[in-house]
Length: 293
Image 1: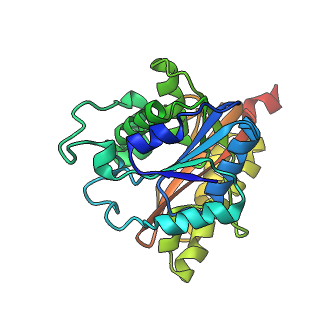
Image 2: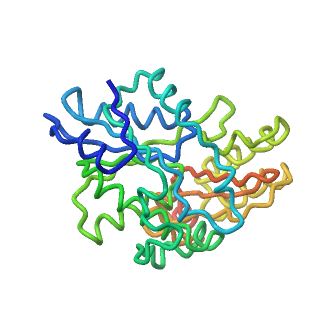
């Protein structure tokens, strides 16, 4: 039976009996889809039947910019609870607080927030200033409230995942952070709550993001520049202008040089109609110079 907690007091009561195994948390902003439920299933597999799985549902205002879709972001708690129940994901506790419960005195607070630092000022952070400060602040608060042994996050938000791992390491937070592979629809589009905003024609255009990533990954044998060129060509053919398309070091999100050899991460963000989508794919790159030595 899943317990629903709307306040800190209710959460404390729901978690008052320690699990026999580990406790896992999956943090969401609701509008749940099969990508979210795949995270929950992964959490259950990690902690086992004796462990405890907590799902948080909270649309975090701190991570939205002034002209972003905070007010319009889909909210339907009953539908989200039904999605979890229908998925057979076996959730023990759902924490679904109001904004004032997480941030007492909102909109003035919190006065102290987590800074994402240099890693939060590039790529998504450059397009959405302050976004990652808001993400890390709420993640740290929820980790303190839930006190999990393990926290699971989707790999679609690659920069976010890297920043959470850095925060946990740099601030000595006692939790294991686990990344779960991207869930995709049959057409290759990465699952996202914002996909609901797409018209049928826009949905067709959105396929170009994953197609560009696949083309880039296939070009990895010809070097880093070939990866970038192949991916850009697919986006251009679909008349999509990316906010960024970049091939980076997975541990630093620094752009890799032309002579890079080894693992890299190909990241893309683009606006399809009025909807901004992100995606990424791991790429194995061959240093072109190696083939001539």
